[in-house]
Length: 175
Ligand code: 5GP
Ligand code: MG
Image 1 (cartoon, rainbow, N blue to C red):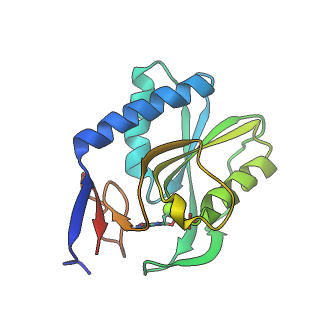
Image 2: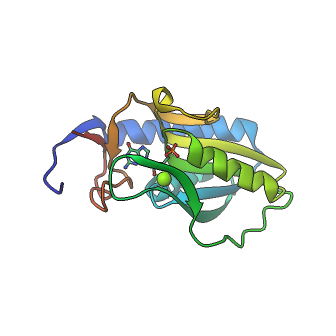
Image 3: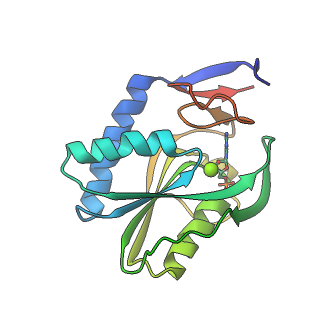
């Protein structure tokens, strides 16, 4: 798999442009100092760029991460979302922007959004770098989306396949 072929879909320049655009859209719907909760591991590069784009337009978000899992080592979702380690995050009364790398079936985003509502966040908006709407199995669509793609397997820009490819500066698909 380390030598699987990766086809570039979005280069660094395109990603940077979209990140700025999403930041602008998010600011229009959130107060200056909301809380970003990124889902590990895949969103870490996106969150890192996103918070700096937000800074450039005057936002002062707090940033936290949480780890969920629905994928094993393969390319297919297990269909069950688990929280790995309870989060101690106090979300009570907070305006939260939940950030994930990819929305596929939608189960992860739905699970996290419901969890944040249970934790009494005052609002929960959702943001995904990549959306695969044709793969949806549950009714949820992210409020902000970087790129919409068909049913392909994405790697790069923080997103892995069996622990590889996170370091790629571009977003690609694997065959
Ligand atoms: P969902 O719960 O929506 O089915 O899946 C969401 C999670 O599955 C994403 O956060 C991501 O970690 C993983 N995932 C979904 N599609 C892909 C993909 O194309 N490539 C990789 N590497 N992970 C994916
Ligand atoms: Mg994920």
